[in-house]
Length: 241
Image (cartoon, rainbow, N blue to C red; front, side, top):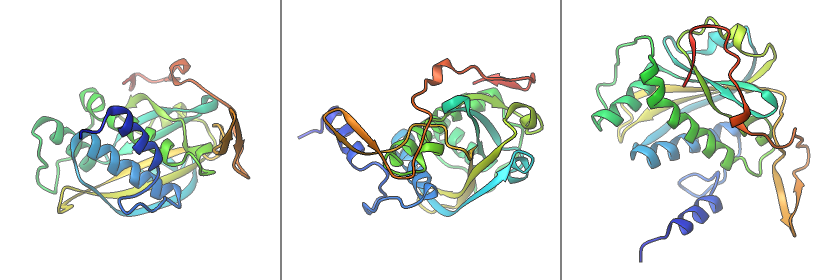
């Protein structure tokens, strides 16, 4: 008997933040890896393997040093007017473009080029889906306060304006090395940076009779609406995605 849409949604919520073996994600990096794999599989039937992951802290000045050359850069809108950044290395971007146009992955080595608005239009829905899956995966994790609630706002084709566009604050940075396809011959990196100070809603530990109880040690700034956010772009290089 075919599974209904409602049953599919309930099953996804029940397994949020769990890997293929059913084990719960223990770290934000693991949750991001699961989110990437799920988004790629659901949207494109694309197998993704997490080869390595790293979580670090850094300043705004250090952020450009963490980016792959010629990466596609997506400014993110988050809770409390927080701004973040997602970056796709040329290999990840090429894979997303190829899988949507030719339905296959090309050679492992790709030619690097400056990303375009068309590239952003094809890649940003994937980034948004990853962020949605990440938020679901961290629903009961203290990291939800700083990692949850971000969505794509704008596309930037050059990292140089980031110092003017982003807030001069500390950032939590997640870098994942990914392999694409059954053999993972094509590899690339997905980078996520969000303000280190959590501004989002606290994760919920229990819910009884309409009341929720935050997890210990979690705090947040309450609810927010991404549609009310307007990109603060002081450069012509920043354009709405």
